[in-house]
Length: 505
Picture 1 (cartoon, rainbow, N blue to C red):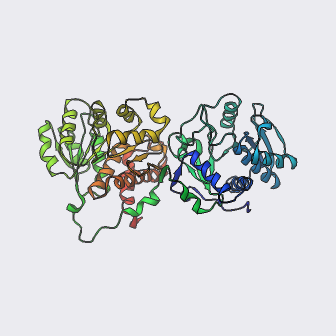
Picture 2 (picture 1 turned 135 degrees about the vertical axis):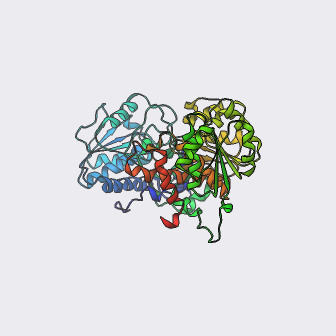
């Protein structure tokens, strides 16, 4: 076993995601069907983690490993032993009764003890001189909120000045949902093994994991054929090739006509962002139906948008007849004007992208359609499912699938780790691009326009949603290079255009 393998970085993560029970089944298959001893898998996991420590924190000389009584703790004992062999000062702090250690974890602990490594119960405090902490407390089997000494240990990790490496999953984080169970480790990096756990990438997962690394522990590739994945990971690198170069004889009529409906008094910017997003991603024509007072500002800033003042709902009819696709909701409001325009859009027989207040109106009288893409944030999702935001965030995968089952079409559940659910045999997908600088007004409006613009160019709804979410997130990452705080939705527009032309990147 080579303890000095070069570790893969986040851009090399697999696309397949699993629930914790599935990864435990993969582990069982590796041991029972493919003859890899469990102790060997544990040694490989510890060696992979130690290689990552050498890569990320080569100057760390004083390391504390917090170990639980399960296999997660066993991995921690292997890391401790390898670090001590490399000349680092290492101490293991035990949570739980060490007599409860069993199987491979007990063997790893005994090898640590036989090597003379320090091993004592956690007494509520960490060494203030430690320059690296390793979280081997709780594995993927956690199902109830963390409490007692375990919670105290997690809080101590989070308040220490040293970086934390989490083994397999940050302790306290649900590997299935990305929800925090009581309290959870806030790691700088997480190395996960055999299969990527879906909860690492949505909800609180990104905040708890830091950068995610993966090691398959050299299990045979054919082992993965035994299970159907639970979800898929999306990123721009994998999606960009779906934007093929245009034909030299193309004309604007080939790329659709998007009608954006929105912009109540005081909210014209939301509608304009959606319209410009559709243009920048390549829609052939974009019209905007908005309050009359918004027309002059929109045309002054972006004359390519065909802005129409719609004072009365019937003024929308000719615009709907000319459009091939409709995006309704940005800045729409929930007063009479917005409600009437929403009803017109629903009756027009055009494929829809539905966002913002259009979703809030829909929540009052939900209907099911197959020709729309819904783009709720957690608050709108809660209204659509008649539950709380906390319910949505407790299991975002279940929420996205429930929305699709109830309302049809394709659902984009926005937030950290945006999800795309489309039903049928297609597994939900989670986008791993994006950053917290995108938590600002207008980002969702821009996404609506980007998705509508892709639909207008002939992408099927699922592809339009998945490509659009990743393109939007990747544009946010590029714009955030100038700083996350103060990032504006309009800062993404130039990057949207460049990313929509991957042959020119």
